[in-house]
Figure 1 (cartoon, helix red, strand yellow):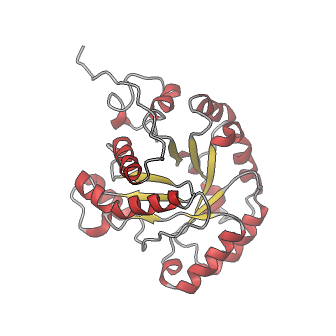
Figure 2 (cartoon, rainbow, N blue to C red):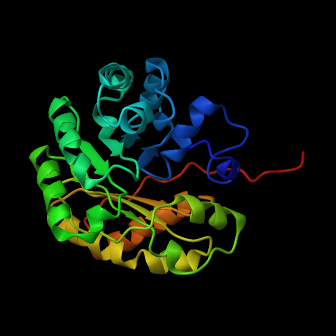
Figure 3 (cartoon, rainbow, N blue to C red):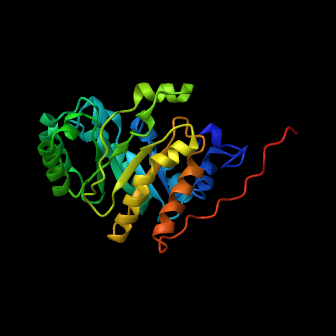
Length: 275
């Protein structure tokens, strides 16, 4: 995520070697979604580079490979899972949570598979699950059964809030693309562990993005007062302004919880020139 082209020359210097971009991103935000791990397990050398570029308290929320979650559907996935866990070992405490994003076809009848999978996972990591099947949100009994499974494993349920995004039709190519791909599920604001994780998708329009996250500002502030340590990821369809928006969200939460530590100061970026 930290290599997004739209950020180069704005949030990170340009030109900048790929192995330095995470260091500059970490001046803007203290957490990142590891979405690329869904498509391919990185080498240990690559992961060691990530560790060198970040402080020990930086948070990686890394998505399990799709061969585990989508192709094997959590069954018979021992070898690719072991390879993934070995690869991310250099992160140490930076591996804040391993993100088990399940396909939309993974239904309540599949929960026993998830239960067995969670029981086999090493206790050295924390886990967070994202489900997208509508049935998990339509029935309180179904939701409660999933919560019981997750709570038994000390795993979190990740909400992906797209309600602000789907409130009105798309107005740009990026929004139209996201309109076809992103899930439409009800909002959940219940934390199961001391480390809740939220994914929020806004709009191209900053004002609408900010208006849509108001509930999460209050929820995050409440969680902090309860002694929890939430991680909130702010997205827009093109993510062009995501680092600045994330800092704005953090500032709004900090205005309600002054003891929350500020984010680091970004390294100044020289503006792009023609020569």
